[in-house]
Image (cartoon, rainbow, N blue to C red; front, top):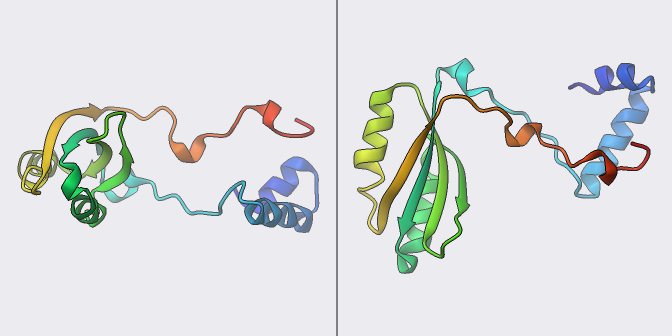
Length: 137
């Protein structure tokens, strides 16, 4: 949302809103970012992927995974050898190739399981802490 729209909704001056945003960013409470809508570019297929990786090859594996434009999210899983990914694709053929050939082709990577994501109900860019975390809420 633009600062001018926030200012109108809050009945504040735009300059005041911009200063507050800048202060929150300086405090490390948030960050300004532009979020791309994947479907606008034809990436309508989302899949969650769970990997088992060899720890001694972890650094090389992560370097390779970070290089894939298809991957929108990477995180460590619960186990010491687990990685969790989210990836986006335009076609089911691209997804199939990535799951069956590309990922298993990385030395030290085993695809444990995956799940198609038919609809994302809330994404990370839409999350905020509960109201009681803020003053004057």
